[in-house]
Amino acid sequence: MIIQPRDAQRPFTTADGSTIRSLLDRTNAPVSNQSLAEASLPPGGSTQRHHHRLSEEFYYILEGTGTMEIDGETRKVAPGDAILIPAGAWHQIRCEESGDSLRFLCCCAPPYSHDDTYFS
Image (cartoon, rainbow, N blue to C red; front, side, top):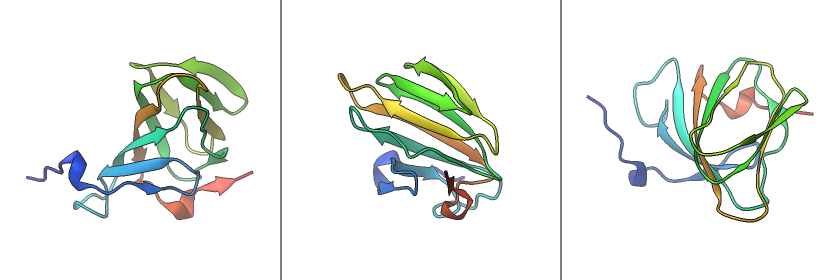
C-alpha cells in the first residue's frame, strides 16, 4: 500500500509556470499510467498557454476563482468545478486578480512530463 502525505512532497515550478506538489507520480510511487498533483497560482497569476501531445488532464478546483481557456474557449471556474483538457488541446488557467490563490488538483494520463509540454 502506498500513501503519500501531502506535506511530505516538495512543491516545484513546472514548465508552464504553475507551482505544483506531486502527490502521486513516477517520482514517489510505482506509478505507470497517471499522475496526481496539487497546483497553485497566486492572485493574478496564470500558466503559460501550452498543450501536451500525450497527456489528457483533469483539473479539479479546490480554492479560489479564475478563468480556464481551452482551444480558444474561455469560462469562469470556481471550487467544485472539474475540467477536462483533452490531449493536444491548447490551454491556460488564470487566477482572478482579487481574492485567494487558485488551488487545484491535476490528474494526467499518461503521467505529467516536462518533455510533453509544448508552448505556442
